[in-house]
Image: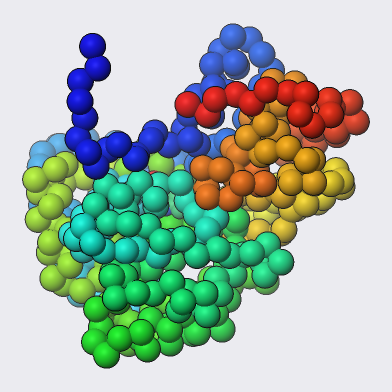
Length: 405
Ligand SMILES: Cc1ncc(COP(=O)(O)O)c(C=O)c1O
């Protein structure tokens, strides 16, 4: 028997990135030598001193409810971190801790959006933005960024997409999946577009900065609030420890923004998950305030892998891959193969045992995302296998596409 579900869930599917990762894992479990490039998380262990802080939190019996918005020490540490790294001033009360950056985004959209509202999302986008907006009963409006433009947002296109119903624009720099880091000049232009759209300040920005420490020089990440500090009153800045500190399983994210919005997000969270795990909060506190050398080490390793993977893919004509400035994804144009990215990803998995994520779930058919949160050896082996596949591949059309479920 299939029971009827709520209307708002009808257009929300499970995450395609998680589905493909599961498929790759199942093949690996069946003994196949699968090379997994689907990971949306660093492959490094959580830094030892951070793990230790978690263990100490248990020993010290920090195992009870905490304030919904997180322990004050952590909120203060986040505010200090934003002050030191970005030069942004937030009061402790303008910061809330959530169960991962995802919950911060969920909370923000839930408290901001009404059913008629629109939210602008730049494509290619992180797979959860579309469902998160729909779950808030709002409508996503997509604005394309183009490969020829380095996947930089086009402020004029954003301006054209703004209507009287637009509630917010979601920015994500560095981007998952393209790795694009939004240039300062573009951020300035976007800031002008947002401020000029209306006479009041009702058009908001949700700035997802979860990859902001994973950046490869000469790329330089700037928050839109740094570029135009007057936007602090209408920006919800979202970040967390998941990616920078290899802490995806600990589930600690945060939001910083105008107090009334943060208060509403805390209120919402008080009726859903309550506080994020107490132990994880102490670990996150250590991550933000302790030694930062592990972050630098991980970023340096990501850069080596990026260079090898992206250069290697670009040698496999007709594949084409722009050099990502940040995050840990190679975003590869596979349209030259003359078939859908879905079909190509399915063949790579079936024929070469290389697991990737096709672009359809990111609102960008024609591309495949390969995570380089994996070892250099795996990258070498995958390039060899894909090279072999390219030489022997069946002509387009002679293959079936696998379901992405
Ligand atoms: C762009 C982006 N934002 C947010 C998140 C969610 O991060 P967290 O694991 O902290 O919820 C992810 C995770 O993949 C992401 O890629």
